[in-house]
Image 1 (tube, rainbow, N blue to C red):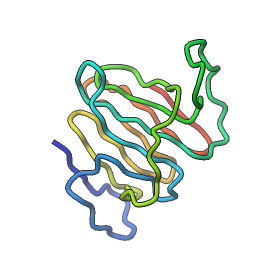
Image 2 (spheres, rainbow, N blue to C red; image 1 turned 60 degrees about the vertical axis):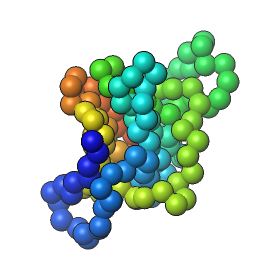
Image 3 (cartoon, helix red, strand yellow; image 1 turned 45 degrees about the horizontal axis):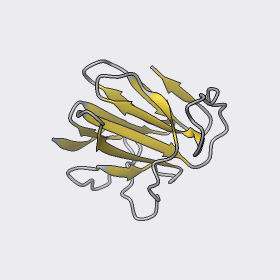
Length: 137
């Protein structure tokens, strides 16, 4: 079941749909989507168009596609960079405004000025992605 909640912090109130399976950051630089992971369970993937951070080295298995702009979190697993991109254009997607979150199953993504943070409630694994930096945990 998906839901969207407003977080603390004030600001302009925005009407949010009951669920956001795909969304963009307020700047439109980050696009995320919830999917079903291979083998079952929920997954969230985020792709960033422009970034200044240095991604980890490209692994040998990533022979094609982009590297460094795509992070995935599969329910029950640690987050990781992926090879390729989400391939979802930001135009027309609903915006996940700052201080708002959206949840699908045990995965929640929160939009803050510091970036998008997605967390797995079952394991505590998470990632944060922003133009200047990323965090995997």
